[in-house]
Length: 159
Image: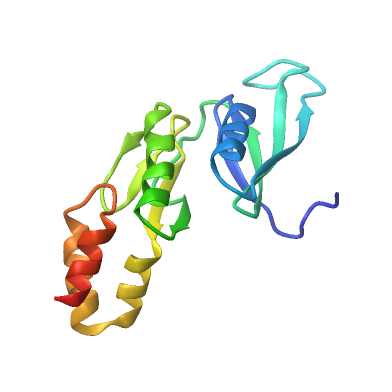
């Protein structure tokens, strides 16, 4: 398989392969591809350690780099997963948070490797795109949430 022209590279301290396998088990259209091992010792690992992991998350090609502790994840980067209903929203949220992750606000959570995720029901995105009073009501409702409550967003949209 040829390397895509543009690939997202996510920095991990040391567990890129474990993270990629978790994502592949959690999200449809996700898989782990090649795992390349370091040909020599490097600042945060030894020859033979997994160094680069090719994977796909919900159809998006990514590379996980085991780069060591020099850089940390931040909310400046996140995967955003669009969901169709509360059951799908809950399934992804619970998978991430329940696997050593943590909740944040407004549909954001963090996995156990520090990568940020937005679990975003389409009803919220549609409400914001509608603009005006409908968007304001949905946005105001969302601001008080951690995991997005689809029914509460739908109710806010209606006023």
